[in-house]
Image (tube, rainbow, N blue to C red; front, side, top):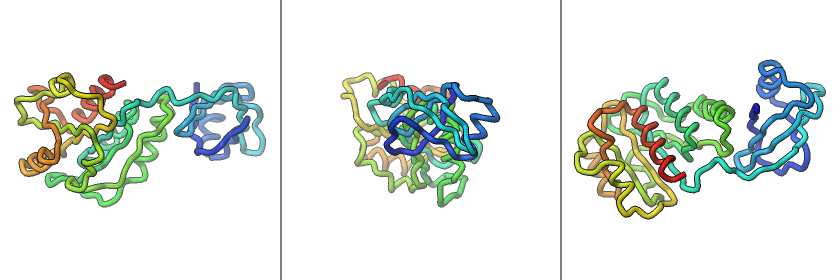
Length: 236
């Protein structure tokens, strides 16, 4: 079923779509007509609708059923991703949205090659388009760019720090050894050049659990997706 993203507000029995991109998506790309079913999500609820009428560049949807969000995780998983090159960051945001990661914190570390001060508007577009495809309800939030040492580490029950030089503790070991189910998890992925030792020591001193992802060295974007996938599987 084709999905559209709508704003949060109280809907009674009808949803009216007016945005050009939604109209183009429904009427010209998928060629939907009166009577066809459409799925609408507002970040809290899922609405199963039927196209009731198409008048003056407006699509009127009749709400057939309103559903609670059955797609989001009970555990909030956030990812602090140190800035990586454009296409890789875009790819990372897309895949973490598919997985249902709660929030992405674009982060600045010492070895970041990419120099940005503000988050890109296209990241929000990537999340929106991915939400249509993955059938999620609650969109992944892209936070403002933040320095590594400004991360709100105190807000999390569990902080995971994959590091290629860690040899003692694997991610599997940490997750399977007497861990109480956390409510909020943060995992931190380093830049393409990796973390400096001082950064690892700082994060560890703040409670981050340094873990290994195995014997192979993974690219930053690969590590971000792998860890996200493991955590989603572990806590869904």
